[in-house]
Image 1: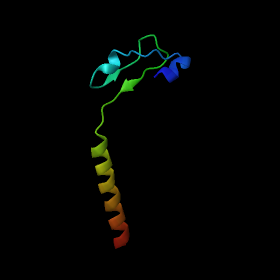
Image 2: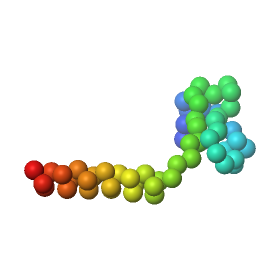
Image 3: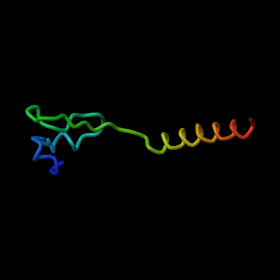
Image 4: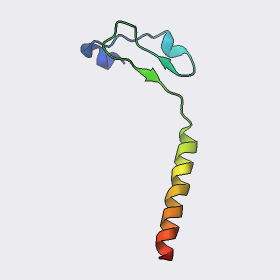
Length: 61
């Protein structure tokens, strides 16, 4: 986050150590940065299933 300090971003390093969804910038920062937990493996698997279904339907037509 230090790379964004020139834009007025004020990182809250203590807040960044928590798990879950948190704002990790200080209240007087020019922007809000959020940590949003994700399950990337699940999202990739869902996308693969969606794409393979579309591909299978296209081959049938």
